[in-house]
Length: 151
Image (cartoon, rainbow, N blue to C red; front, side):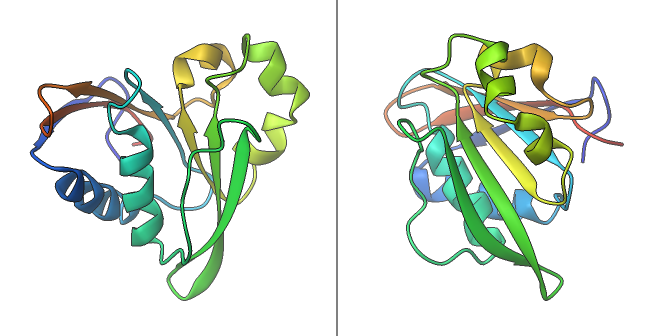
């Protein structure tokens, strides 16, 4: 993944292109990695996560866990099973709520964590989290700004 402070800007011109970028991002992720996504409602956070999950071979629907807070998917990396944990922090009041969910078990385990609304618990995210800010430019176009990540 990108090094700390590194900035990469990507522009996608459709939901399908955003998902394709997510699938390619899966090639850069592995056990213990965390990705924090931010952007307005409808910006494309879940769409990007659907692409990442597709890149890991997740079967079945990938939907935002707005009410249950965490969804777990089973994917694969190098022919080995890989757990993907999809968080939606929209309904959290702050980092303490995330701690109460046992986030350390997820963040410092052997899965990949994908966190929507990451800024709501900024201080709880592990060091080396890849941050992606998604901006809707127009109906279909998205600007993705990637920062951080492990070196």
